[in-house]
Length: 122
Image: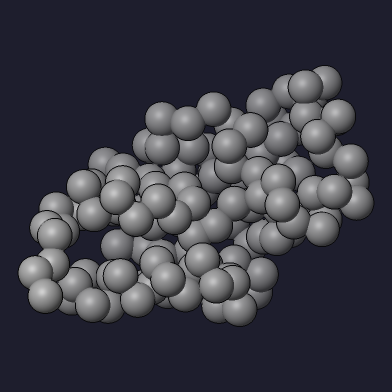
């Protein structure tokens, strides 16, 4: 599996800890150092089942600086993919890509369900 993250992000750190604690093998990719390409974004979006807008990191400074909240509704899908590919900090993270699925953002219950991780007994 491919784990796309920003290592300084506390949410990404929580997601990585969940994967490691449950012995889920993954390859880590730093989203700022290695921006996703347009073709990767299209593939991941297709497997995520999410609206394209959900791939944007709406809490990020760059999103706010570019005033994307107001601009996205006027953009085509291709324009959104192109914009996302310009800077990894625009992309919501973490992203986990596996066979047939893409998880965007960290929702622990969703990740556990998709990965088949059961409840841990104390």
